[in-house]
Amino acid sequence: MGMVYCLCRRGAARPVCRRFAVSMSEIPRLCAAHTAQKEVFMRTKGVTMNDIAAAAGVSQSTVSMILNQKSSSFPAATVEKVLAAASALNYQFRRTAASPSSNTVLVISVTPSNPYYTSMLQGIDRDASEQEITTVAAFTYHNPELEASCVRMALNQNFLGIIYLFPPDNEKVFNETRQHIPIVTICDKSNNVPGDIVELNNFEAGILAAQHLLSLGHTNIAVFASSSDRASTSRATRVAGVLSEIRKYVSDDHLLVLSGNSSWHAFLEDKAYYLQMGRSLVQNKRFQQSNTTGIICLNDMTAYGVMDALIEQNYRVPEDFSVIGSDNLLFSGLAQVSLTTIEHHPDIVARSALSTLLSRTHIFASNQSAATSTSFQVRCQPALIVRNSTGPARQRGT
Image (cartoon, rainbow, N blue to C red; front, side, top):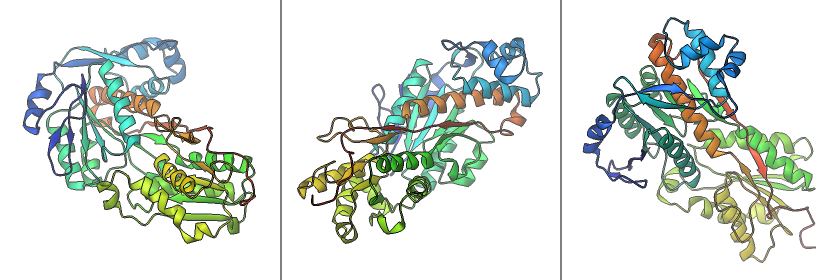
């Protein structure tokens, strides 16, 4: 069906995808227009119900009846075990006509200016469209009141479920709502979000970045972070991964950790926030006076700002400085100096989030009282993508 609309910080609605431009007043009509559907698991290539049965430790007939909702007599623990196995095996399902219900998923994001969130939105929309599910994107700008309004709208309009691309800002409304509607959150485990999560392993991402620079002989390393309070938990976890690995081989005297000074409000208003932050950190006196040869940035946009500033000062990347980012944005391999980065697989994250959400709808349908008794946790592992921005360490000035 495609993504329908987004909520702006000031409450206005505007189109974000290819097909629809609707106002808030039209949303109830639009949602009501969708025909009711029943969820039926369909076989993914190479994965059978026998595979799920073996993974869950039940019979094939039990799997068939649970996935096709032909019986509600199974214990909640058995249902959850089968659905967890199906989700882990990436067993996809489509929807066929049945009883009345909404065919819409709300996806809550922070801001349309962050390309990483945008890539996940597009991935969820693409996978949902294949199953004739409409996705509605809401940009809440970390405003708890706006988040609550969006969530309640989804609940009141009987949406299929909600996917958060970040930890909730309104925990009270989040915890109340997840008792009544399936919710999946994409976040780091360290965020301690209850319920179903698709875990981004930021600690491992930090380790991979550190290991790469260490393997190239870098022993004077700088970590460029954000001062954003809202992003502090996941990024602090990424920094912790970096430091845990570096400190195995390098003393703190050879390690520099710097944070940008801009506020979270500035990030929301300025799309070039991270670019500017990267440029400013290169100007930092502590960095200028250090012997740094390797720079780890917590996202690609900061890394671009860093490389721009270094090149303007007639430094060479990677001959003088190696720079590594994180996110593997679409244009990371197309820059003047292609960026070595950490891939978080937003396509896999998106697919896992939607699959987990739809698995949870089965539990709600079969046993509402046990709908939140057990949580699904799907971990997506990061990967190192080596390009031209990193190379062997050398003495600065030689």
